[in-house]
Image 1 (cartoon, rainbow over the protein chains, first blue to last red):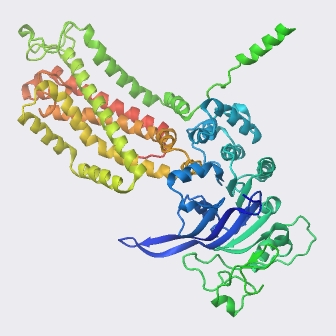
Image 2: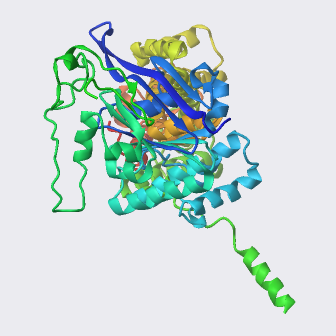
Image 3: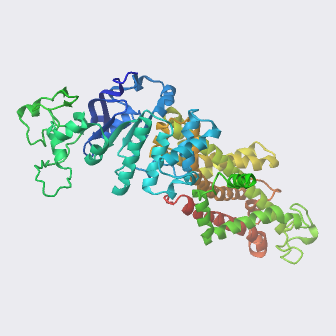
Length: 323
Length: 310
Protein backbone atom coordinates (compact mmCIF):
# COMPACT_ATOMS: atom_id res chain seq x y z
CA UNK A 1 0.00 0.00 0.00
CA UNK A 2 1.38 3.39 -0.89
CA UNK A 3 1.74 6.05 1.72
CA UNK A 4 -0.79 8.28 -0.01
CA UNK A 5 -3.56 5.70 -0.06
CA UNK A 6 -6.17 6.13 2.61
CA UNK A 7 -6.42 3.46 5.31
CA UNK A 8 -10.07 4.22 5.86
CA UNK A 9 -12.30 5.68 3.21
CA UNK A 10 -15.91 6.51 3.89
CA UNK A 11 -18.02 7.47 0.90
CA UNK A 12 -21.57 8.74 1.08
CA UNK A 13 -22.27 6.76 4.25
CA UNK A 14 -25.87 6.88 5.41
CA UNK A 15 -27.50 5.34 8.40
CA UNK A 16 -31.23 5.82 8.87
CA UNK A 17 -33.03 4.36 11.84
CA UNK A 18 -36.67 3.57 11.06
CA UNK A 19 -39.31 5.05 13.33
CA UNK A 20 -42.01 2.46 13.88
CA UNK A 21 -45.40 3.21 15.23
CA UNK A 22 -48.91 1.91 15.40
CA UNK A 23 -50.32 -1.57 15.81
CA UNK A 24 -48.52 -3.14 12.87
CA UNK A 25 -45.35 -1.13 13.59
CA UNK A 26 -45.28 0.43 10.20
CA UNK A 27 -42.30 2.57 9.40
CA UNK A 28 -43.53 6.14 9.59
CA UNK A 29 -40.23 7.88 9.08
CA UNK A 30 -36.50 7.73 9.58
CA UNK A 31 -34.06 9.26 11.98
CA UNK A 32 -31.25 10.30 9.70
CA UNK A 33 -28.46 9.70 12.16
CA UNK A 34 -25.78 9.72 9.50
CA UNK A 35 -26.73 11.40 6.26
CA UNK A 36 -24.28 11.16 3.40
CA UNK A 37 -20.90 11.43 5.08
CA UNK A 38 -17.59 11.18 3.27
CA UNK A 39 -14.09 11.40 4.62
CA UNK A 40 -10.86 9.51 4.49
CA UNK A 41 -8.06 8.86 6.93
CA UNK A 42 -4.51 8.22 5.84
CA UNK A 43 -2.28 5.77 7.61
CA UNK A 44 -0.76 7.29 10.73
CA UNK A 45 -3.21 10.16 10.87
CA UNK A 46 -5.46 11.01 13.74
CA UNK A 47 -8.81 12.13 12.51
CA UNK A 48 -10.94 13.92 15.06
CA UNK A 49 -14.67 13.75 14.54
CA UNK A 50 -16.38 16.50 16.49
CA UNK A 51 -19.93 17.70 16.88
CA UNK A 52 -22.49 18.23 19.58
CA UNK A 53 -24.47 15.43 21.23
CA UNK A 54 -26.84 13.77 18.82
CA UNK A 55 -24.94 14.79 15.72
CA UNK A 56 -24.32 11.16 14.77
CA UNK A 57 -20.61 10.91 15.55
CA UNK A 58 -20.87 7.62 17.41
CA UNK A 59 -23.16 6.14 14.79
CA UNK A 60 -20.49 6.86 12.18
CA UNK A 61 -17.99 4.85 14.23
CA UNK A 62 -20.40 1.99 14.78
CA UNK A 63 -21.48 1.84 11.18
CA UNK A 64 -17.88 1.76 10.00
CA UNK A 65 -17.27 -1.26 12.22
CA UNK A 66 -20.53 -2.90 11.13
CA UNK A 67 -21.91 -2.91 14.65
CA UNK A 68 -25.00 -1.52 12.98
CA UNK A 69 -25.75 -1.98 9.30
CA UNK A 70 -25.41 0.93 6.93
CA UNK A 71 -28.30 2.27 4.90
CA UNK A 72 -26.16 3.34 1.95
CA UNK A 73 -22.63 4.26 1.02
CA UNK A 74 -19.35 2.41 1.28
CA UNK A 75 -16.70 1.89 3.91
CA UNK A 76 -13.31 0.91 2.57
CA UNK A 77 -10.68 -0.33 4.95
CA UNK A 78 -7.28 -0.77 3.31
CA UNK A 79 -9.04 -0.82 -0.05
CA UNK A 80 -11.56 -3.52 0.95
CA UNK A 81 -15.23 -2.63 1.24
CA UNK A 82 -16.18 -3.98 4.66
CA UNK A 83 -19.78 -4.40 3.58
CA UNK A 84 -18.76 -6.81 0.81
CA UNK A 85 -17.23 -9.26 3.26
CA UNK A 86 -18.79 -12.52 4.41
CA UNK A 87 -19.31 -12.79 8.19
CA UNK A 88 -16.27 -15.02 8.61
CA UNK A 89 -14.01 -12.84 6.45
CA UNK A 90 -15.14 -9.83 8.45
CA UNK A 91 -14.45 -11.63 11.72
CA UNK A 92 -10.92 -12.42 10.63
CA UNK A 93 -10.32 -8.79 9.65
CA UNK A 94 -11.68 -7.46 12.95
CA UNK A 95 -8.36 -7.45 14.88
CA UNK A 96 -7.08 -4.84 12.43
CA UNK A 97 -9.72 -2.32 13.42
CA UNK A 98 -10.60 -1.87 17.03
CA UNK A 99 -13.05 0.23 18.99
CA UNK A 100 -12.53 1.88 22.33
CA UNK A 101 -15.77 2.49 24.09
CA UNK A 102 -16.96 5.62 25.80
CA UNK A 103 -18.11 3.99 29.01
CA UNK A 104 -15.34 2.02 30.69
CA UNK A 105 -17.86 0.57 33.13
CA UNK A 106 -20.23 -1.15 30.75
CA UNK A 107 -17.68 -2.21 28.15
CA UNK A 108 -16.03 -4.82 30.37
CA UNK A 109 -17.84 -8.02 31.28
CA UNK A 110 -18.07 -8.05 35.09
CA UNK A 111 -17.51 -11.80 35.22
CA UNK A 112 -14.36 -12.02 33.10
CA UNK A 113 -10.92 -11.48 34.59
CA UNK A 114 -9.23 -8.65 32.77
CA UNK A 115 -6.27 -10.80 31.75
CA UNK A 116 -8.70 -13.12 30.01
CA UNK A 117 -10.66 -10.22 28.55
CA UNK A 118 -7.52 -8.89 26.94
CA UNK A 119 -6.08 -12.22 25.86
CA UNK A 120 -9.09 -14.08 24.55
CA UNK A 121 -9.18 -12.41 21.14
CA UNK A 122 -5.53 -13.40 20.59
CA UNK A 123 -6.56 -17.00 21.07
CA UNK A 124 -9.61 -16.81 18.84
CA UNK A 125 -7.62 -15.30 16.00
CA UNK A 126 -4.67 -17.62 16.45
CA UNK A 127 -2.42 -14.62 17.05
CA UNK A 128 -0.80 -16.27 20.04
CA UNK A 129 -0.56 -19.81 21.33
CA UNK A 130 -2.15 -20.50 24.73
CA UNK A 131 1.30 -20.49 26.31
CA UNK A 132 2.25 -17.13 24.85
CA UNK A 133 -0.96 -15.32 25.67
CA UNK A 134 -0.08 -14.49 29.24
CA UNK A 135 3.21 -12.89 28.24
CA UNK A 136 1.56 -10.85 25.50
CA UNK A 137 -1.15 -9.64 27.86
CA UNK A 138 1.36 -8.72 30.56
CA UNK A 139 3.39 -6.73 28.00
CA UNK A 140 0.39 -4.75 26.88
CA UNK A 141 -0.81 -4.24 30.46
CA UNK A 142 2.52 -2.70 31.34
CA UNK A 143 2.55 -0.62 28.17
CA UNK A 144 -0.85 0.77 29.15
CA UNK A 145 0.30 1.74 32.63
CA UNK A 146 -1.20 -1.22 34.47
CA UNK A 147 0.67 -3.82 36.46
CA UNK A 148 1.21 -7.52 36.04
CA UNK A 149 -0.70 -8.28 39.22
CA UNK A 150 -3.82 -6.80 37.64
CA UNK A 151 -4.02 -9.83 35.35
CA UNK A 152 -6.27 -11.91 37.59
CA UNK A 153 -8.49 -9.11 38.80
CA UNK A 154 -12.07 -8.42 37.91
CA UNK A 155 -13.32 -5.15 36.40
CA UNK A 156 -15.05 -4.07 39.61
CA UNK A 157 -11.67 -3.89 41.33
CA UNK A 158 -10.57 -1.03 39.04
CA UNK A 159 -11.20 2.69 38.86
CA UNK A 160 -12.70 4.31 35.77
CA UNK A 161 -9.34 5.41 34.43
CA UNK A 162 -7.84 1.97 34.97
CA UNK A 163 -10.79 0.35 33.24
CA UNK A 164 -10.32 2.59 30.26
CA UNK A 165 -6.67 1.49 30.20
CA UNK A 166 -7.91 -2.10 30.16
CA UNK A 167 -10.18 -1.23 27.24
CA UNK A 168 -7.24 0.30 25.41
CA UNK A 169 -5.03 -2.68 26.22
CA UNK A 170 -7.73 -5.00 24.90
CA UNK A 171 -7.64 -3.18 21.57
CA UNK A 172 -3.87 -2.72 21.40
CA UNK A 173 -2.93 -6.32 22.09
CA UNK A 174 -4.32 -7.22 18.66
CA UNK A 175 -1.87 -4.87 16.96
CA UNK A 176 -4.58 -3.04 15.04
CA UNK A 177 -4.06 -0.63 12.14
CA UNK A 178 -7.05 1.51 12.99
CA UNK A 179 -8.49 2.40 16.35
CA UNK A 180 -11.85 4.07 16.55
CA UNK A 181 -12.08 5.79 19.91
CA UNK A 182 -15.65 6.74 20.73
CA UNK A 183 -15.38 9.55 23.28
CA UNK A 184 -12.79 7.55 25.20
CA UNK A 185 -12.13 10.20 27.82
CA UNK A 186 -15.45 11.93 28.31
CA UNK A 187 -16.45 9.61 31.16
CA UNK A 188 -13.23 10.30 33.05
CA UNK A 189 -11.95 12.96 35.41
CA UNK A 190 -9.95 15.72 33.79
CA UNK A 191 -6.72 14.63 35.49
CA UNK A 192 -7.21 11.10 34.19
CA UNK A 193 -8.20 12.38 30.75
CA UNK A 194 -4.73 13.82 30.25
CA UNK A 195 -3.10 10.51 31.18
CA UNK A 196 -5.28 8.56 28.78
CA UNK A 197 -4.72 11.04 25.97
CA UNK A 198 -0.99 10.83 26.48
CA UNK A 199 -1.30 7.06 26.39
CA UNK A 200 -3.06 7.36 23.03
CA UNK A 201 -0.28 9.58 21.76
CA UNK A 202 2.51 7.36 23.01
CA UNK A 203 0.92 4.30 21.43
CA UNK A 204 0.61 6.08 18.11
CA UNK A 205 4.29 6.95 18.13
CA UNK A 206 5.27 3.41 19.06
CA UNK A 207 2.96 1.41 16.84
CA UNK A 208 2.15 3.85 14.04
CA UNK A 209 -1.55 3.64 14.76
CA UNK A 210 -4.27 5.43 12.88
CA UNK A 211 -7.06 6.88 14.97
CA UNK A 212 -10.58 7.95 14.35
CA UNK A 213 -11.10 9.97 17.47
CA UNK A 214 -14.72 10.81 18.19
CA UNK A 215 -15.19 13.58 20.70
CA UNK A 216 -17.20 16.63 21.56
CA UNK A 217 -14.28 18.14 23.43
CA UNK A 218 -12.45 20.46 21.07
CA UNK A 219 -9.48 21.04 23.34
CA UNK A 220 -8.85 17.28 23.46
CA UNK A 221 -9.20 17.03 19.72
CA UNK A 222 -6.86 19.96 19.14
CA UNK A 223 -4.27 18.32 21.35
CA UNK A 224 -4.39 14.94 19.70
CA UNK A 225 -5.64 15.12 16.14
CA UNK A 226 -3.92 15.94 12.89
CA UNK A 227 -7.15 16.24 10.93
CA UNK A 228 -10.59 17.25 12.01
CA UNK A 229 -14.09 16.70 10.73
CA UNK A 230 -17.01 18.70 12.08
CA UNK A 231 -20.43 17.04 12.07
CA UNK A 232 -23.80 18.62 12.49
CA UNK A 233 -27.07 16.70 12.47
CA UNK A 234 -25.64 13.69 10.66
CA UNK A 235 -23.83 15.69 8.01
CA UNK A 236 -20.19 16.63 7.65
CA UNK A 237 -19.85 20.39 7.66
CA UNK A 238 -16.14 20.86 7.33
CA UNK A 239 -12.98 18.78 7.23
CA UNK A 240 -9.38 19.84 7.14
CA UNK A 241 -5.97 19.71 8.80
CA UNK A 242 -6.07 20.78 12.41
CA UNK A 243 -3.89 23.87 12.25
CA UNK A 244 -5.68 25.44 9.28
CA UNK A 245 -9.07 24.58 10.64
CA UNK A 246 -8.36 26.05 14.04
CA UNK A 247 -6.67 29.15 12.62
CA UNK A 248 -9.24 29.87 9.97
CA UNK A 249 -12.54 28.02 10.39
CA UNK A 250 -14.62 28.36 7.24
CA UNK A 251 -18.02 27.00 8.19
CA UNK A 252 -20.15 29.16 10.51
CA UNK A 253 -20.81 26.12 12.68
CA UNK A 254 -17.10 25.45 13.07
CA UNK A 255 -16.63 29.11 13.95
CA UNK A 256 -19.31 28.88 16.61
CA UNK A 257 -17.80 25.71 18.06
CA UNK A 258 -14.30 27.16 18.18
CA UNK A 259 -15.46 30.38 19.74
CA UNK A 260 -16.90 28.32 22.59
CA UNK A 261 -13.59 26.72 23.53
CA UNK A 262 -12.31 28.21 26.77
CA UNK A 263 -8.97 29.97 26.46
CA UNK A 264 -6.64 30.32 29.43
CA UNK A 265 -6.10 34.03 28.80
CA UNK A 266 -8.74 35.93 30.77
CA UNK A 267 -8.11 39.36 29.23
CA UNK A 268 -8.30 38.12 25.66
CA UNK A 269 -11.39 39.64 24.04
CA UNK A 270 -13.02 37.22 21.70
CA UNK A 271 -15.96 37.32 19.43
CA UNK A 272 -18.30 34.67 20.78
CA UNK A 273 -20.78 33.21 18.37
CA UNK A 274 -23.59 31.89 20.51
CA UNK A 275 -25.97 29.55 18.78
CA UNK A 276 -29.60 29.80 19.68
CA UNK A 277 -32.07 26.97 19.99
CA UNK A 278 -31.64 23.24 19.97
CA UNK A 279 -30.44 20.72 17.47
CA UNK A 280 -33.39 20.20 15.07
CA UNK A 281 -35.17 16.86 15.05
CA UNK A 282 -33.02 14.46 12.99
CA UNK A 283 -36.19 12.67 11.85
CA UNK A 284 -37.28 15.88 10.16
CA UNK A 285 -34.16 17.87 9.32
CA UNK A 286 -34.57 21.40 7.94
CA UNK A 287 -34.52 21.68 4.14
CA UNK A 288 -31.55 23.22 2.41
CA UNK A 289 -28.54 23.58 4.64
CA UNK A 290 -29.28 21.71 7.86
CA UNK A 291 -27.60 24.43 9.87
CA UNK A 292 -29.60 27.37 8.52
CA UNK A 293 -32.06 27.40 11.45
CA UNK A 294 -29.27 28.32 13.82
CA UNK A 295 -26.79 29.99 11.50
CA UNK A 296 -26.24 33.71 12.18
CA UNK A 297 -25.26 34.29 8.55
CA UNK A 298 -28.01 32.35 6.79
CA UNK A 299 -29.39 33.78 3.55
CA UNK A 300 -32.36 32.74 1.41
CA UNK A 301 -30.31 30.28 -0.62
CA UNK A 302 -29.39 28.36 2.54
CA UNK A 303 -33.02 27.57 3.21
CA UNK A 304 -33.60 26.03 -0.20
CA UNK A 305 -30.48 24.52 -1.61
CA UNK A 306 -28.37 21.85 0.07
CA UNK A 307 -24.78 23.05 -0.02
CA UNK A 308 -22.27 20.74 -1.71
CA UNK A 309 -19.44 19.33 0.34
CA UNK A 310 -16.72 20.74 -1.85
CA UNK A 311 -12.97 20.99 -1.97
CA UNK A 312 -11.64 24.45 -1.14
CA UNK A 313 -7.95 23.67 -1.45
CA UNK A 314 -5.30 22.99 1.18
CA UNK A 315 -6.81 19.56 1.86
CA UNK A 316 -9.94 21.26 3.17
CA UNK A 317 -13.56 20.63 2.37
CA UNK A 318 -16.58 22.56 3.48
CA UNK A 319 -20.36 22.47 2.97
CA UNK A 320 -21.47 26.09 2.97
CA UNK A 321 -22.81 28.43 0.32
CA UNK A 322 -21.11 31.44 1.84
CA UNK A 323 -17.54 30.22 1.58
CA UNK B 1 28.87 -16.89 44.74
CA UNK B 2 27.30 -18.84 41.97
CA UNK B 3 25.28 -20.91 44.44
CA UNK B 4 23.79 -17.77 45.91
CA UNK B 5 22.74 -16.68 42.46
CA UNK B 6 21.23 -20.04 41.77
CA UNK B 7 19.31 -19.83 45.01
CA UNK B 8 18.05 -16.39 44.18
CA UNK B 9 16.91 -17.58 40.80
CA UNK B 10 15.18 -20.50 42.48
CA UNK B 11 13.44 -18.20 44.93
CA UNK B 12 12.29 -15.97 42.11
CA UNK B 13 10.89 -18.97 40.32
CA UNK B 14 9.11 -20.15 43.41
CA UNK B 15 7.00 -17.00 43.44
CA UNK B 16 3.79 -18.11 41.78
CA UNK B 17 3.27 -16.51 38.39
CA UNK B 18 -0.45 -16.41 38.97
CA UNK B 19 -1.24 -14.21 41.94
CA UNK B 20 -3.84 -15.30 44.46
CA UNK B 21 -7.28 -15.58 42.88
CA UNK B 22 -9.16 -12.36 43.21
CA UNK B 23 -12.58 -12.06 44.63
CA UNK B 24 -14.80 -12.99 41.74
CA UNK B 25 -18.45 -12.07 41.82
CA UNK B 26 -19.16 -15.67 42.80
CA UNK B 27 -16.97 -15.46 45.85
CA UNK B 28 -18.53 -12.16 46.90
CA UNK B 29 -21.98 -13.60 46.43
CA UNK B 30 -21.13 -16.63 48.53
CA UNK B 31 -19.80 -14.41 51.27
CA UNK B 32 -22.98 -12.36 51.32
CA UNK B 33 -25.13 -15.49 51.23
CA UNK B 34 -23.35 -16.90 54.26
CA UNK B 35 -24.22 -13.70 56.11
CA UNK B 36 -27.91 -13.99 55.28
CA UNK B 37 -29.24 -15.79 58.38
CA UNK B 38 -32.69 -16.58 57.06
CA UNK B 39 -31.30 -18.06 53.85
CA UNK B 40 -28.84 -20.15 55.82
CA UNK B 41 -31.69 -21.38 58.04
CA UNK B 42 -33.56 -22.41 54.90
CA UNK B 43 -30.47 -24.14 53.62
CA UNK B 44 -30.00 -25.94 56.95
CA UNK B 45 -33.57 -27.26 56.88
CA UNK B 46 -33.22 -28.47 53.30
CA UNK B 47 -29.88 -30.06 54.08
CA UNK B 48 -31.38 -31.73 57.14
CA UNK B 49 -34.29 -33.10 55.10
CA UNK B 50 -31.94 -34.50 52.49
CA UNK B 51 -29.65 -36.03 55.09
CA UNK B 52 -32.55 -37.52 57.05
CA UNK B 53 -34.25 -38.99 54.00
CA UNK B 54 -31.18 -40.42 52.34
CA UNK B 55 -29.15 -41.51 55.36
CA UNK B 56 -31.79 -41.86 58.09
CA UNK B 57 -33.50 -45.06 56.85
CA UNK B 58 -30.15 -46.87 57.00
CA UNK B 59 -30.36 -46.69 60.79
CA UNK B 60 -33.99 -47.75 61.00
CA UNK B 61 -34.89 -51.35 61.82
CA UNK B 62 -38.05 -50.94 59.73
CA UNK B 63 -38.68 -50.77 56.00
CA UNK B 64 -41.42 -48.92 54.22
CA UNK B 65 -43.48 -51.94 53.25
CA UNK B 66 -42.91 -54.36 56.12
CA UNK B 67 -46.44 -55.21 57.23
CA UNK B 68 -46.88 -56.09 60.86
CA UNK B 69 -50.47 -56.80 61.87
CA UNK B 70 -49.49 -56.85 65.55
CA UNK B 71 -48.95 -53.10 65.66
CA UNK B 72 -51.76 -51.59 63.60
CA UNK B 73 -52.42 -47.87 64.09
CA UNK B 74 -50.17 -47.59 67.12
CA UNK B 75 -49.57 -44.13 68.51
CA UNK B 76 -45.99 -42.82 68.58
CA UNK B 77 -43.88 -44.70 71.07
CA UNK B 78 -40.24 -45.40 71.78
CA UNK B 79 -40.36 -48.35 69.39
CA UNK B 80 -42.16 -46.50 66.63
CA UNK B 81 -41.25 -42.82 67.00
CA UNK B 82 -44.02 -41.63 64.73
CA UNK B 83 -46.38 -44.53 65.30
CA UNK B 84 -47.60 -47.09 62.77
CA UNK B 85 -50.27 -47.09 60.07
CA UNK B 86 -53.24 -49.34 59.40
CA UNK B 87 -50.96 -52.12 58.16
CA UNK B 88 -48.52 -51.80 61.05
CA UNK B 89 -45.86 -50.09 58.93
CA UNK B 90 -43.51 -47.68 60.71
CA UNK B 91 -44.54 -44.11 59.82
CA UNK B 92 -41.09 -42.61 60.39
CA UNK B 93 -39.47 -45.07 58.01
CA UNK B 94 -42.18 -44.40 55.46
CA UNK B 95 -41.90 -40.62 55.78
CA UNK B 96 -38.15 -40.74 55.27
CA UNK B 97 -38.36 -43.13 52.33
CA UNK B 98 -41.19 -41.06 50.88
CA UNK B 99 -38.91 -38.06 51.22
CA UNK B 100 -36.35 -39.82 49.09
CA UNK B 101 -38.91 -40.13 46.31
CA UNK B 102 -40.30 -36.61 46.69
CA UNK B 103 -36.89 -34.94 46.86
CA UNK B 104 -35.53 -37.02 44.00
CA UNK B 105 -38.53 -36.22 41.85
CA UNK B 106 -38.21 -32.53 42.70
CA UNK B 107 -34.49 -32.42 42.04
CA UNK B 108 -34.54 -34.54 38.90
CA UNK B 109 -37.44 -32.72 37.28
CA UNK B 110 -35.74 -29.42 38.09
CA UNK B 111 -32.50 -30.58 36.47
CA UNK B 112 -34.39 -31.73 33.42
CA UNK B 113 -36.48 -28.59 33.03
CA UNK B 114 -33.47 -26.34 33.68
CA UNK B 115 -31.53 -28.21 31.03
CA UNK B 116 -34.30 -28.04 28.44
CA UNK B 117 -35.36 -24.51 29.39
CA UNK B 118 -31.85 -23.10 29.34
CA UNK B 119 -30.93 -24.79 26.09
CA UNK B 120 -34.05 -23.63 24.27
CA UNK B 121 -33.96 -20.17 25.87
CA UNK B 122 -30.34 -19.65 24.88
CA UNK B 123 -30.95 -20.85 21.34
CA UNK B 124 -34.02 -18.64 20.97
CA UNK B 125 -32.30 -15.59 22.44
CA UNK B 126 -29.04 -16.04 20.57
CA UNK B 127 -30.27 -16.86 17.09
CA UNK B 128 -33.60 -15.00 17.25
CA UNK B 129 -35.69 -14.95 14.08
CA UNK B 130 -37.59 -18.08 13.07
CA UNK B 131 -36.01 -20.34 15.69
CA UNK B 132 -36.99 -17.87 18.39
CA UNK B 133 -40.57 -17.74 17.11
CA UNK B 134 -40.88 -21.53 17.02
CA UNK B 135 -39.48 -22.10 20.49
CA UNK B 136 -41.38 -19.27 22.11
CA UNK B 137 -44.73 -20.12 20.54
CA UNK B 138 -44.33 -23.67 21.82
CA UNK B 139 -43.51 -22.29 25.26
CA UNK B 140 -46.50 -19.94 25.09
CA UNK B 141 -48.73 -22.84 24.15
CA UNK B 142 -47.63 -24.81 27.21
CA UNK B 143 -47.96 -21.74 29.40
CA UNK B 144 -51.51 -21.02 28.28
CA UNK B 145 -52.64 -24.45 29.49
CA UNK B 146 -52.96 -24.37 33.29
CA UNK B 147 -50.34 -26.79 34.51
CA UNK B 148 -52.33 -28.63 37.19
CA UNK B 149 -55.17 -29.78 34.91
CA UNK B 150 -52.54 -30.74 32.33
CA UNK B 151 -50.75 -32.85 34.93
CA UNK B 152 -54.05 -34.42 35.95
CA UNK B 153 -54.70 -35.44 32.36
CA UNK B 154 -51.21 -36.89 32.05
CA UNK B 155 -51.69 -38.74 35.34
CA UNK B 156 -55.06 -40.12 34.29
CA UNK B 157 -53.55 -41.30 31.01
CA UNK B 158 -50.82 -43.13 32.92
CA UNK B 159 -53.43 -44.96 34.96
CA UNK B 160 -55.49 -45.66 31.84
CA UNK B 161 -52.48 -47.16 30.08
CA UNK B 162 -51.63 -49.22 33.17
CA UNK B 163 -48.06 -47.95 33.39
CA UNK B 164 -46.18 -50.12 35.91
CA UNK B 165 -45.93 -48.46 39.31
CA UNK B 166 -42.14 -48.62 39.30
CA UNK B 167 -41.91 -46.47 36.19
CA UNK B 168 -44.44 -43.90 37.30
CA UNK B 169 -41.89 -42.03 39.36
CA UNK B 170 -39.76 -41.37 36.27
CA UNK B 171 -42.73 -40.43 34.17
CA UNK B 172 -43.89 -37.99 36.86
CA UNK B 173 -40.44 -36.36 36.68
CA UNK B 174 -40.84 -36.01 32.94
CA UNK B 175 -44.34 -34.57 33.30
CA UNK B 176 -43.18 -31.99 35.79
CA UNK B 177 -40.34 -30.88 33.52
CA UNK B 178 -42.71 -30.55 30.60
CA UNK B 179 -44.72 -27.96 32.53
CA UNK B 180 -41.56 -26.52 34.11
CA UNK B 181 -39.35 -25.59 31.16
CA UNK B 182 -41.40 -22.93 29.33
CA UNK B 183 -41.27 -20.36 32.13
CA UNK B 184 -37.57 -20.87 32.48
CA UNK B 185 -36.90 -20.71 28.75
CA UNK B 186 -38.74 -17.41 28.64
CA UNK B 187 -36.67 -15.84 31.38
CA UNK B 188 -33.42 -17.14 29.92
CA UNK B 189 -34.36 -15.80 26.49
CA UNK B 190 -35.25 -12.42 27.96
CA UNK B 191 -31.94 -12.26 29.76
CA UNK B 192 -30.12 -13.26 26.56
CA UNK B 193 -31.82 -10.49 24.63
CA UNK B 194 -30.85 -7.96 27.26
CA UNK B 195 -27.28 -9.26 27.52
CA UNK B 196 -26.61 -9.18 23.81
CA UNK B 197 -27.24 -5.43 23.76
CA UNK B 198 -24.72 -4.76 26.54
CA UNK B 199 -21.66 -2.88 25.50
CA UNK B 200 -19.32 -5.68 26.56
CA UNK B 201 -21.11 -8.00 24.16
CA UNK B 202 -20.65 -5.43 21.41
CA UNK B 203 -17.00 -5.46 22.37
CA UNK B 204 -16.87 -9.20 21.70
CA UNK B 205 -18.19 -8.49 18.20
CA UNK B 206 -15.54 -5.86 17.56
CA UNK B 207 -12.87 -8.21 18.89
CA UNK B 208 -14.13 -10.81 16.43
CA UNK B 209 -14.51 -13.54 19.03
CA UNK B 210 -15.89 -16.90 17.99
CA UNK B 211 -19.52 -17.66 18.79
CA UNK B 212 -18.50 -20.42 21.15
CA UNK B 213 -16.42 -18.10 23.29
CA UNK B 214 -19.10 -15.40 23.28
CA UNK B 215 -21.61 -17.96 24.50
CA UNK B 216 -19.59 -19.88 27.07
CA UNK B 217 -17.27 -17.18 28.40
CA UNK B 218 -19.48 -14.13 28.21
CA UNK B 219 -23.17 -14.97 28.06
CA UNK B 220 -23.51 -18.10 30.17
CA UNK B 221 -21.62 -16.77 33.21
CA UNK B 222 -24.11 -13.93 33.26
CA UNK B 223 -27.05 -16.31 32.92
CA UNK B 224 -26.04 -18.75 35.61
CA UNK B 225 -27.13 -16.59 38.57
CA UNK B 226 -30.60 -16.26 37.10
CA UNK B 227 -30.75 -19.97 36.37
CA UNK B 228 -29.65 -20.92 39.88
CA UNK B 229 -32.35 -18.78 41.39
CA UNK B 230 -35.15 -20.08 39.16
CA UNK B 231 -33.93 -23.63 39.59
CA UNK B 232 -34.12 -23.35 43.35
CA UNK B 233 -37.69 -22.13 43.26
CA UNK B 234 -38.44 -24.84 40.72
CA UNK B 235 -37.42 -27.62 43.12
CA UNK B 236 -39.95 -26.39 45.65
CA UNK B 237 -42.64 -26.12 43.01
CA UNK B 238 -41.90 -29.59 41.67
CA UNK B 239 -42.04 -31.16 45.14
CA UNK B 240 -45.37 -29.49 45.71
CA UNK B 241 -46.77 -30.56 42.34
CA UNK B 242 -45.62 -34.12 42.86
CA UNK B 243 -47.33 -34.18 46.26
CA UNK B 244 -50.54 -32.84 44.77
CA UNK B 245 -50.47 -35.43 42.01
CA UNK B 246 -49.73 -38.27 44.41
CA UNK B 247 -52.41 -37.02 46.77
CA UNK B 248 -54.94 -37.37 43.98
CA UNK B 249 -53.57 -40.81 43.18
CA UNK B 250 -52.23 -39.62 39.83
CA UNK B 251 -48.54 -39.45 40.63
CA UNK B 252 -46.44 -42.09 42.28
CA UNK B 253 -48.74 -44.90 43.44
CA UNK B 254 -48.94 -46.93 46.63
CA UNK B 255 -47.29 -49.02 47.91
CA UNK B 256 -44.31 -46.77 47.02
CA UNK B 257 -44.66 -44.05 49.65
CA UNK B 258 -44.51 -40.37 48.81
CA UNK B 259 -45.51 -37.51 51.04
CA UNK B 260 -48.56 -36.87 48.87
CA UNK B 261 -49.96 -40.38 48.83
CA UNK B 262 -49.27 -40.84 52.55
CA UNK B 263 -51.58 -37.93 53.26
CA UNK B 264 -54.06 -39.34 50.80
CA UNK B 265 -54.01 -42.67 52.64
CA UNK B 266 -54.97 -40.85 55.86
CA UNK B 267 -57.68 -38.87 54.10
CA UNK B 268 -60.68 -40.08 56.08
CA UNK B 269 -62.47 -38.87 59.18
CA UNK B 270 -61.23 -41.61 61.49
CA UNK B 271 -57.55 -41.23 60.63
CA UNK B 272 -57.86 -37.46 60.62
CA UNK B 273 -59.30 -37.35 64.14
CA UNK B 274 -57.82 -40.38 65.82
CA UNK B 275 -54.50 -41.02 64.09
CA UNK B 276 -52.90 -37.61 63.48
CA UNK B 277 -49.44 -39.24 63.37
CA UNK B 278 -50.43 -40.61 59.96
CA UNK B 279 -50.80 -37.25 58.24
CA UNK B 280 -48.94 -34.68 60.32
CA UNK B 281 -45.41 -36.00 59.57
CA UNK B 282 -45.73 -36.11 55.75
CA UNK B 283 -47.69 -32.83 55.74
CA UNK B 284 -45.11 -31.12 57.87
CA UNK B 285 -42.33 -32.51 55.71
CA UNK B 286 -43.83 -30.99 52.57
CA UNK B 287 -44.46 -27.71 54.34
CA UNK B 288 -41.02 -27.44 55.90
CA UNK B 289 -39.13 -28.48 52.78
CA UNK B 290 -40.96 -26.20 50.38
CA UNK B 291 -40.87 -23.20 52.73
CA UNK B 292 -37.17 -23.76 53.41
CA UNK B 293 -36.38 -24.05 49.71
CA UNK B 294 -38.27 -20.86 48.97
CA UNK B 295 -36.57 -18.94 51.77
CA UNK B 296 -33.22 -20.15 50.54
CA UNK B 297 -34.19 -19.20 47.00
CA UNK B 298 -35.15 -15.72 48.18
CA UNK B 299 -31.74 -15.32 49.78
CA UNK B 300 -30.03 -16.58 46.65
CA UNK B 301 -31.97 -14.12 44.56
CA UNK B 302 -31.05 -11.20 46.80
CA UNK B 303 -27.42 -12.15 46.47
CA UNK B 304 -27.13 -13.20 42.85
CA UNK B 305 -29.75 -11.20 41.07
CA UNK B 306 -30.55 -8.12 43.11
CA UNK B 307 -32.34 -6.31 40.28
CA UNK B 308 -34.97 -8.97 39.81
CA UNK B 309 -38.19 -8.52 41.73
CA UNK B 310 -40.88 -11.08 42.17
